[in-house]
Image 1 (tube, one colour):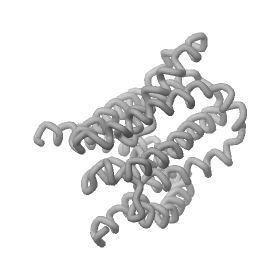
Image 2: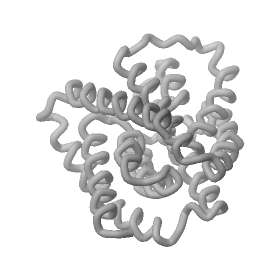
Image 3: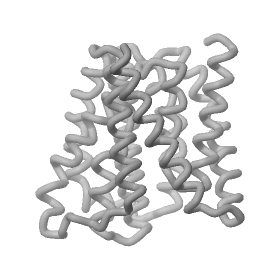
Image 4: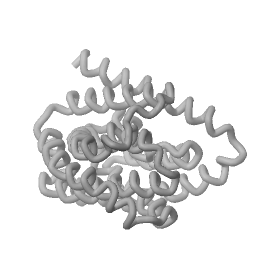
Length: 247
């Protein structure tokens, strides 16, 4: 890992964590698009796993209600596992441009959804029926692109559960997915010693960024910053799709 990309990677960790501290958006959701400018997805995705996992565990400890979230959404978590296997299998085999384009599509869809703030469309009597397919589809997308948010995030938000239950439930999904991804990426030799040598020290940069952003949140216009970050994700996603067309 030469000094220039290494410095950019640590800068991306810090910036993504700082913006997560201010806006509450996911670390990997912000960090992966930044890394995609200089790294292939097969390199970028393993790099963000451990820093993202550490931030999720910290939030889970604060949220509580672990058993309740596990009992309610176990179907989502279990069905995500075969999806992750399929997604990582494709990541290992497809061209990097395809994985970047898929990440771009997910970013565009997520940004448009978040910017328009749609009302929930799922009703409680469909929760169990949709849980399995949502977990499976999110697993495939997660494995191929590194993004953990679609469609599980809109699904859980639409159920209108209380804030603490939502935070625990979504971060439990992120954590299970990240742990599974570590095993799968190691199986395909994508989680290397060089990756660990960068991502493990990067946890300190993530922690510092989240703490700093969290302290500044009460002094800064959170909604405005969130809108700016979402527009950045939208434009980055569009660029990744356009880049696929040029290759």
